[in-house]
Amino acid sequence: MNLSFSRLVLVALALACLSMATTFSLAAYPERPIRLLVGYPPGGGADFTSRLIGAELSKELGMQVVVDNRPGAEGSLAAHIVARAAPDGYTLLLIPFNLALSPSLKKNLPYDPLKDFEFITLMASAPMALTVNPSLPVKSVADLVNLAKTRPGGVNYGSSGTGGTSHVSAELFRSLAKINLVHVPYRGSGPALLATISGEVNMCFGSLPPILTHMKTGALRVLGVTTSKRAKVAPDVPTISESGVPGYEFSTWYGLGAPAKTPRSIRLMLHAEIAKVLTMSHVQARLLNDGAEPIGSGPDEFQKYFAAEVNKWKAVVKNAGITPE
Image 1 (cartoon, rainbow, N blue to C red):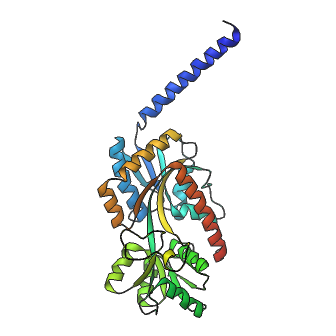
Image 2 (cartoon, one colour; image 1 turned 45 degrees about the vertical axis):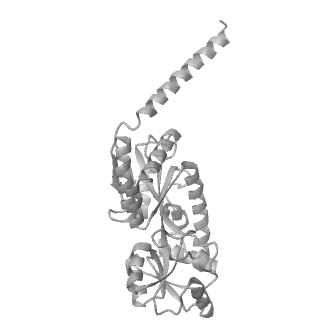
Image 3 (cartoon, one colour; image 1 turned 30 degrees about the vertical axis):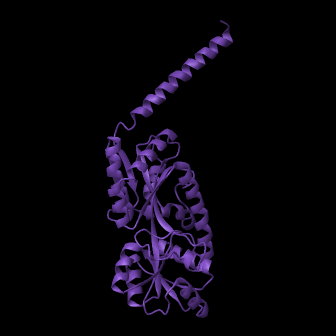
């Protein structure tokens, strides 16, 4: 046996041992509890989705998934912690829509949303709705667009605050419809919705569950949902896109991510287990009751979607003249 052949044999044996060790390590995952960081306080949509799916995932994995709420800096605190964590599959991040919006609104993020995370799955999305005070003389999205064009600057909308979901969804609407709307920011989505009900503002974009409740009482008129397809919880409400503003699409969504360099095999395994959880009838029912719809897309699909969202909202924020802080 010559020297070169001996070296090849040794290298082959070393690679075989490494492969066996890696396979054994991944086969044992998870060996301890998994921490899922959520950048928002308990009680909201992000927390609800995390706890619902985390509880079922714990059963499927045979290991506890612990939800760790780390509110602060509009979700950036939790994202920063996960970006610096070991890429071993034991620290995960609930990736909300806001993470894709943050590069457009924040100047000095302590992490890069596109480079510092691996994407696992887009778990669920939640449509919003465009609603108006019933006194506004419009019955459809097309009516609203025509009214705004005949009254430049004469139609206003309430939002949860500058840079919030209800603000950017309205700005996307304004841009695509080519109309002039006046922004009236409030301290939260609740006050903006109440201002629309009272007639203090003409319209707002908001979450479906509370809006549908007020629609049934006649306190609000719902003109359209923001997603490309009609919402399962409101199949009779048309989409904004089909009602006069082609191409309009917006939803808040929740995905799952991990620190950069987390092994792909771990991410694929987690995706498979979560996809299984999302097919469970009681999970789907609870998501729909909260206004969300299950998705379960794979790592590559979610990564492409996230990158597209980042680019989309950069353009919207720039067009709206929103200054990054």
